[in-house]
Image 1 (cartoon, each protein chain N blue to C red):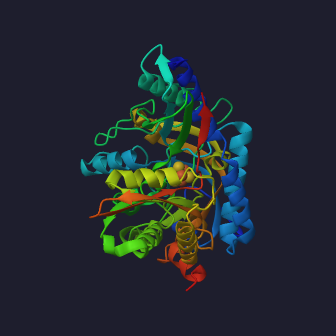
Image 2: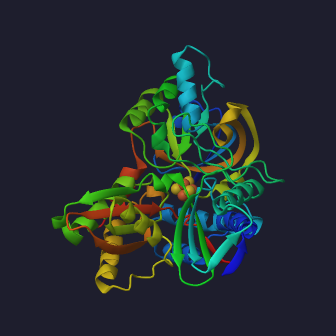
Image 3: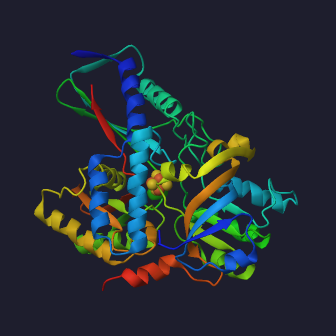
Length: 186
Length: 279
Ligand code: SF4
């Protein structure tokens, strides 16, 4: 993406995310967790019932992805982002609990952007439809919860230089809006 | 009458599921290369580079281009002189999908609408049968991802809205879709028939060789105009700003009811996968 690349290792701190600005290219290394529609529904239902989450979200990054099955010799199958707005209803709850990053594609609702500012969380975009390429940055994958959901199960991923771009930073900026303004032709 | 064993259909469908998911069609690949040359945004260019590299990896290593290996949408034109033997044709198609998605390490994405329980084998596929002259069977298999399908819409315009109403609806739909459907996208527009027929036409439009204009000059001009208007919105690759949001607009039209102007927009992502075979 942009020439300048920022390297970050999870878990992330307020200071880590505070340094990021919209449009920054970031290479993420360390552990991240997967979760998409059905997993988010279950996680928030668990919180409503006062139960604990499959992993402590504090300082963590959730990747909205439902990977393809791994071929022999691969840690994971194709694994690109899914569309994030479907998680908009659930994300603020997790952000409030200390989630520091989300990876997906497409725009977010204002409530999510506001929660990102209030509790210091960053929404990263990954290139949708580049799942084979992105899978190369995933070194290990292990299902840790909701196995019955198949591709939607929660997985713990070990990633190395996983390429993302900052779409919503902790200052309320939005790459989709800025990008559109910059390149729109009357 | 030419007899065709349904087991042969199973084999062909199985192979099409895999090949369609591994090999990005050449016209799409070339269009991405062209877009890379013209894209003004540096971020947009690096997105296009990644998409192209991704297609190379998928092709060389025979892995899915995208983790969303889609619902299997199948267009099957059956020659009227073909007789299927050896079993139930539909079940043979289902079995081809089951085997293709399992053996090809493809993601199974069908689920119960409310419990969200995964069906587990990516059935049922969406099958469009047609009967044509001759004794051949022509099959096109187009895996369709959910992200771009979710951004598609059908509307029943008032006839007075005319061609302008159609164009405005299409451009507005893309503007609202933003980065969600994995741009650069291909926009299929279907006008005519009934509610569901317009949607079918829009889907069919996506199968046309990329950028090949509609032979009708008025429709071709409308395609070009919509493409320019959409790209001028500045949304760019992945919606992160730039000059390439759509690679092409394909517009198909048929007569409709005197009371109606059905208009469908079917958006396809850059992973515009389809493969065909003849039996
Ligand atoms: S919209 Fe297309 S490229 Fe994007 S995730 Fe879905 S299937 Fe893949």
